[in-house]
Structure formats: structure tokens, C-alpha cells
Length: 339
Length: 144
Image (cartoon, rainbow over the protein chains, first blue to last red):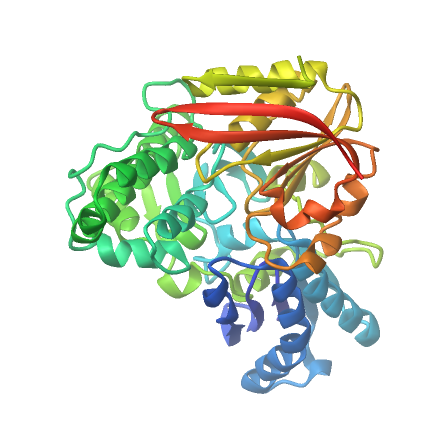
């Protein structure tokens, strides 16, 4: 089935065309304008989406060598995301499907991340645990049955990606914060500073990163201007370790507690090398399968939306023309609406 | 207690407790400005406030989503964070004006950009770092 998918939930406008397992086109127009602002600015994002959506979709079709009429299904991210950004891609796709009389499906962005590593759309052994780590999310989700999601734990305050961005800002590093901190951290000592580990010693599978951000702030205040520069690599490495430790620890705990057979890493922070390395170590000789997405698939893209849509479209699932984009849309709601 | 006050808080738990206390005394439809630096405790206080209203679910940072909406036995609570916004016109797009019209309680972190939009009775809460502790001052004000 040839599917055109559109993703515009945050600052990237993306379009992709897949034909079953084959990716025919994958276009992502990143918006470097945000590097100037030190964060994603919603208004800028939705304006940029409006400018770029048509060229991006046009380019995807051209790369795929297909005419719009040859597309057999159209999918778009319905949420979660920034309202103004979501609306652009979602309604563009819906209008296109309506005009061409093609099947249309609104897709949950997080489900896209879950399917990102699976070219065939075939999931690894269930029950599977998904560790979603991004700018807006830090969640552990159990999937015992395809399309059904059970929340095991989540951040009680800041998301891991948000902690990266805010600490990068404190350190005077660029945006996005993750890559900037990781580059510095590579030459630093992760044990140089004793930063707190969220909810260590507490029951449950939740996360907390707000105290870590504050601890970095206090540490910085106690350092001289010069020390902040000379010890930057150590600060970054110690901070990164304090983010990664609970992610790995809680995942392993969830695997033990919930009879998990496979672990899938998803979301923008899945590109973090330290996190990948620590999970690979933990997986050595373990009885569960580890799935790390290719680096190119960690950031937002439309291939993952197409993959999440593929199985659903084949099963005959369709969204109504009255379906709206929903900025707050959890995977768990998805399970409720598909009993 | 809500008209005016100040307190020095030694812990996150104490900050949440203050949020619960203020929420219990707050009239319906109140707009609240939470002013303070990164890590000063704005979201922690807001979390206590939401708990005080009887919100049962997790109350994460609104930085990424800009606004989180909670239903409580005492009406809706809109929790904003304007940290990532740069331009005043963006405030209209995110629906802040509608949230401030008294139909719900509204907590706004990093409210500086929206200073012009607040009208009538508001609660201004200032949070400051004080070593490892935090200083919090609050006052009801009437804005013309």
C-alpha cells in the first residue's frame, strides 16, 4: 500500500511516502530559525509550517516518483504537539484526502515513535517496553498487544529533553541542548560532580528531573566564571549521567516487574550516545531484546507516521472527516478509543 | 492569608504545601502570576496549587506544551508557561486571553511577556533563590 504521511507536531515539517516496507521518500525541513531563539517558538513554527508544507509534500512525491492519484492512503500526525503546528499538517492532509477521495488516518505522534525502528511494521516479541524520551515526554509504556498501551511510569515534573535544553541554557550552550551537552560531555568525567538521581530509592517507575536542573544551577553559582569554562566538560558529563542513570535503572526495573521480552528506545533523546551505550551494556547476556532506532529515525519524521498508519490502514481503519488535531493526546487514550 | 504574605521555604515539600494553602484560600477565577528564575520553584508551587484544588493526576512541567489544563472539583485550572514565547502576538494564538477571563483559575509561569493582558484582581507571587532555600512573597493586586 502506497502511503503519504505528513508530520508537523513541533518544529519540523516532514512528509514521507512508503510502499509497504519500502521507503520511497523521506523529506524533513528542519527550521534553523529556532537556533537563534534558544527553543522552539510556537508562532514561528506554525508560520514556517504554512510556508513549507506544500514544497515539502511536493518534494516527497517527486522523490517517490509518484503522482498524488497513485497514493492509496494519507496519514498525518493528530497529536500530541503544539496546536498551531499540528493544525497545519493535519488539515493539509485531511483536505488532500477529501479532495482525492483517499482513505485518511490521524496518527498519534508517540505511536509513530514506537514504530520508527520497525521497517516491516512487525513488532519485536511482546510484551514490549517502550522508553519514550523527548523534549515533552519521559515515559515507560508496556505493550502487551499491538495498539494497546499501558503507562507504567512517567516524569512527575520536567521531561528529560527539557532538562537538557534548560541546563544547556544555564551553561550558555546552544539549542537543541542535547547534542550540545553530549559533545561537551564526551571529554568530561561523569563522576566529577555528584548530581542527584531523581526518585532514587522510591517505589514505582516514575522519573523526576526538576531537582537535577536546580542542583546544576546551585553548582554553577558556587563556581567562578573561569571554573565554569574549564570544568564545563565535567559538568556536562556528570549532568548527562544523572539523566541517563534513572532512564536505564527504571527500564531494568520495569523489565523485571512486568515480564518484558523486548525494550524499544524512542523519541529525540534516543539519539543520545551515552543512553544507547548504557542500554547496550545492560542488554549484554540479558534475556530481553533491545531495539535502538537508527539515529536518522530518532528525530521527528514522517516515515514513522506512515509506518504506524500502515497496519491500521490495511486493517481498514479510517478517521472521520470531522476528526480534529489534539495537542494533548496520550497513547493511553488511543487504547481506550480502540477497545 | 492570601492578601499578602512572605515565607522562607527549606524544601520542595514545603513549597508544594504553600501552593495547597494558597489554592485553598483563592477565589474562583483568580489569575496568578508566578515570577522567578529557572529552578526557583514555580512549577513546584503550581503542583501544590493543583493538588489543593483536588487534581488527582500528575502535574508535569508545562514548558513544552505551553499550557496544561486540569479539571478539578473546584473548576478548571489552566497552567501556563510562557518561557518559550518571544512575541506578544503569540499570546493570542495560544489562547491565554480566554484563560484569563475569569472562567477558570489560571496560573502563569514567566508571565512578563503577558504583563499587559492581566486585568482586575490578580495574585502576584515572587519566588527567589536564597542559598539552598527559597523566598516566596505574594500579594493580591488590582490592575487597571
